[in-house]
Length: 269
View 1 (tube, helix red, strand yellow):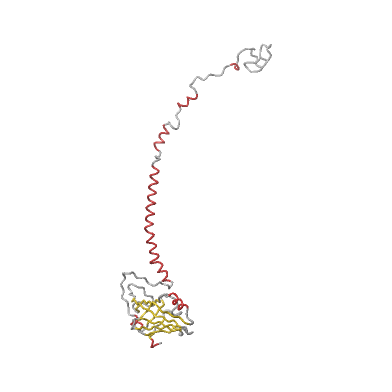
View 2 (cartoon, rainbow, N blue to C red; view 1 turned 30 degrees about the horizontal axis):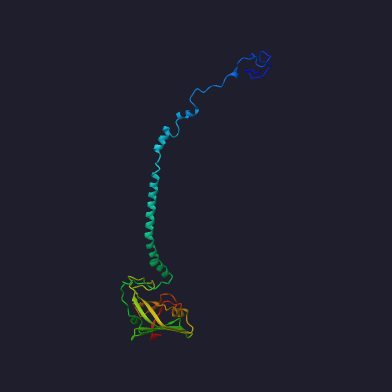
């Protein structure tokens, strides 16, 4: 028999529980049925409790949050600003390239003494000078007391003859057309050593043809003979005396290490 009060088992012949003394067969706590649920079913109970979806605090939070459709507007505005910046840069780049090519590069080259031949616009007007009135019809110079450089002007056909003779007996001969321009100090840079109040500066170009080279000569002689390049010079004519200086504009070594050099008429050579 099982005691309904303490739960131990004892013999059926015994009248009381040997453990707790309760009368055999009496009802105790062990014989109470399980309590019954008197409320609504558990599965329907949660519908009475507010959730985050329908609570008043959740609704307040939603009303204060930023609408999702606002974000694309911000992105579109940002994209428009970027597009404007890109268009502005594309318009500025050609101007920058033109400045570098037309202004900055020639200035850098000029600082190294390798200024390229001047380029003139097709609508640029200038008055060509008579080179023979400056150099004479037959003139020349001595270079390093050894080599000689001579120019002869043929008035009959308006051509110049160039003759360069080296101390080793080599000769450089060429026929040339000449172009001469007076450099207005208001438009051209005069070197500090030859200020415009003391000198007139001229730019001269010789276009060569029928060039011949014979014997031992400086490198520039063969180079010009092969390439057919023009010879570019600067002339500095003193306003106070008969001094005339000639300068190799391209720095190819026309006059050796001395540059510019004095230029004399033929009778003084």
